[in-house]
Length: 246
Image (cartoon, rainbow, N blue to C red; front, side, top):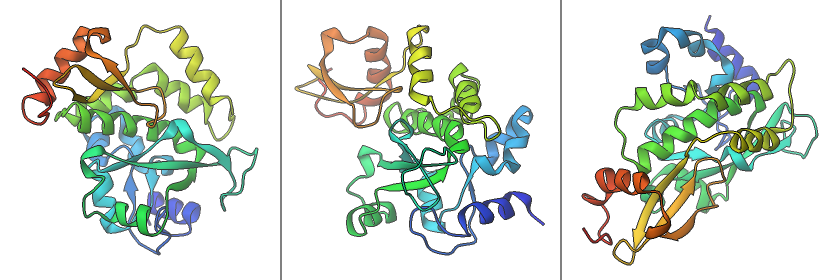
């Protein structure tokens, strides 16, 4: 008997949360390798709130950080997606990393040909999806390879515990955005990443980790934090950004 699998089957009716296909595949939001590597979080390996059901192909694409979910743009709903004040489930938009948006991937096929643009998941999974979203940004836009450290960085971030408590299935609190803003107003944490540049590095596209994925904005490089520029230069532009002028 596998409690993790059995619980996910009950929550999602043994169906992929994106394609709605029946599947025996189960995947962890915060990966098993991290849970095993950091014994402190070993219990996450068996927690259904840290799990999703995806088909084999979508499972691989998710684990390779090709797509993620924009946890800042969810809405409360029931299991069928109907708007609901009950916070047991949420509907969350799917996002695909820039480098993969035109590739031959199943997630792109489902988005563009099947018009599947969001998923319905347990609200109690939000805190884990938040960690995975941060790692998705680091992997795709900072080219950070030490993924174990990234997971550790964000699972030990104060906001993870805050979100965990907000979406506690026993004592839920629907004021997600309020809690986020309270944290930001009382924190010096810098949470931006540069996604790309244009005009030979004169402008850069900035994404705030604490705002929806669509809220990216172009800024003049002179107005951007120097450390952020240095991170971008060392991690991205040398290999990939042809618009950057060294």
